[in-house]
Amino acid sequence: MWVQRVIELTGWEPLGISADWAAIEGELGVALPADYKELYEAFGGGVFSDSVYFLGRDEGLAFDFLTQWRVALSVDQDSALGSVSAVEPYAIYAPGGKGLVHWGSTEWADEYCWLIDAERPGDYPVLARADDVGPWHQYDMSTSEFLYRILTDADFQPFGVARYALNPTFEPGSSDDE
Image 1 (tube, rainbow, N blue to C red):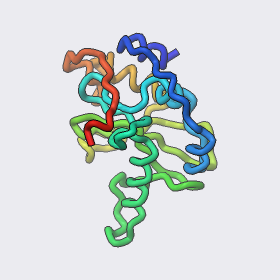
Image 2: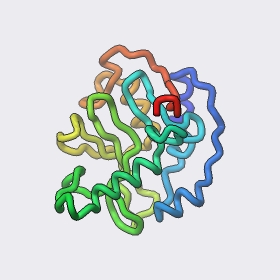
Image 3: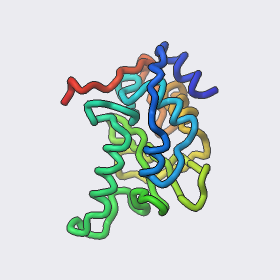
């Protein structure tokens, strides 16, 4: 329902990307939200409303979900950088554990993640924070509902980008940007 609303809002023609979900989820050690998979298959990776970055599949890697997760995990686990995580008080999700997996952000450094706990499969609260340093806010809603609300609800504070009167568009990621 919410995925379809995002598609209709943007006037996007779904790409119908096929993904090897068994391999992706095997690497993560956990299943991903069903509606995220629908968004991924419909949009790939790219930018909504010229400001909301969505991680999916991108041959150029900038919007590639798995590449971004691997990099974040590597940095989070690098002992040379100290014991402080960039997502305090959480850590980046590591297979079999509990932590954050980024699926989106904004040009204003807002971050959108799931709090994934391998011991609680199927539970994917959205955690978001403004300006890359603010407090984390938890939303018990699907990825696609959260995305729809930030794109359309000017009162969805502090994350609603609709207050900026941006056109509800989608621009796919591209390897031409590399």
